[in-house]
Image (cartoon, rainbow, N blue to C red):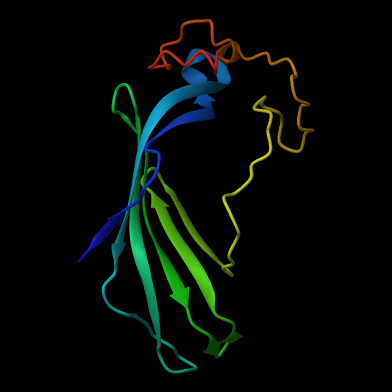
Length: 170
């Protein structure tokens, strides 16, 4: 069965506000330089989906494994096995063709998302965002807003930063 490793940059940057009650904070800003691998494998055969009101349908797809590690320590930051499946038109219930993504993250999260696929010309465009935390339901802080979390001061040494960050980031 062939596998198809993803092509492109394998290095990145991770910024996540996560719980850190042991240190006396509600949240802690963790920063990591990262290495990522993303491998797709052919499922190799149709997946029968048993029907009760209509005949069985055949699903076709691929499964994948995404691994993101800290670039300095090689410690695991994210591991996600999953699959992408094409779902054909059904008559009972009457539904149009769709695409489904099933993902599992071993610390207890899983995802099943179904929707329509579409083609986009060119790469995605991401607008700048503000990383200052705010309460659920609160207003997003404006760009340049002052932040009370000490982790935002990249000049202060921190045991959760495993790399010296590039000068462009600091």
